[in-house]
Image 1: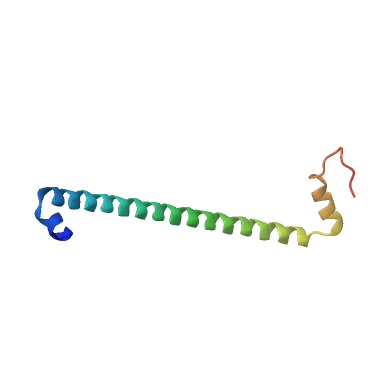
Image 2 (image 1 turned 90 degrees about the vertical axis):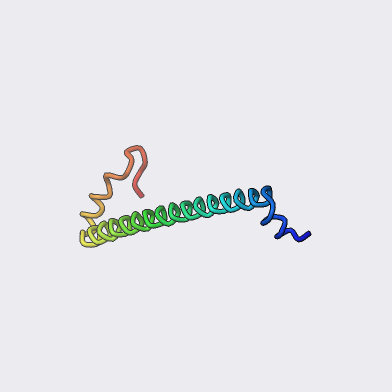
Amino acid sequence: MNIVALLTTTRIGQSILWIGGLALAAWALAASLVAAGRSQERARQDAQSLDNLRTRQETDHEISSLGDDAARQRLRRWMRDDKPAL
């Protein structure tokens, strides 16, 4: 007997098809939700990267516009007291 005919004509076969279809639909829904979550997280990380880049460019511009002495004085606050400056 053909397996397709067996699945479509018997109550057990129809039940198996229904359960399989529901399982497939649930898996497809879960996969689409995971994909949407990944896409949302990627967009959030891209936005954060752009914000970080913008901040870095502003800081670089601000530092490059300072003179040598002013930049040295500003960066001195990042030095630890117990480490000698090079």
